Length: 260
Image (cartoon, rainbow, N blue to C red):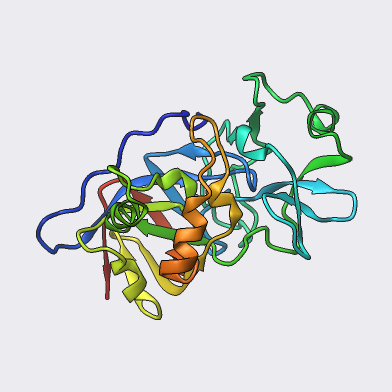
């Protein structure tokens, strides 16, 4: 099911140091659209199965995004669309690393709440010659196939912003939200192997640099230009981390996450 506009607040950080645990899981079937909250995520060699596997694609091959770059073209309003798969993503024997087995064309809900009919409907809504295209030889990921962020980091960013509540995790579009007791602890894992539950092993490769999409309005989140300015001034534009997959498997809510 598509992710609901309102999200349950993430748990407050623990008062005593302990292993991080998985508090929330998200997957985004279409790049730069809203996605879905799930009880578990399949992780394959590519990354989070089905994540960003599809993208709004222009005739020149550029992908619809919240920013302009060599690969991307800014497409206004994508964060008011949502996408989900009608069948679960599963890793299957014989599937290629980027096959996204079980992830056919996603179901897309438009900003007015209606179902997207086809590519012609998408082009009409966006006012451009676009189609919904599946990833081919070139990855749709900006950087890493699995991304993580800690609740304590969100609480600390909220404090820096001067807010009474934590920064909203939805702004940062990470796959795995961790319940953590120490701000920025996930950044200490860069260069290390991390065990996620009993199956998955990741190598955390980098702090994730964020862009203007963190400031944009989406569903019931209003525009907030303070977010990127504050991250730029205090955190080198970074929040959360990206990881490569060492051992595929399934990540579930409540799984322990720890460096090994």
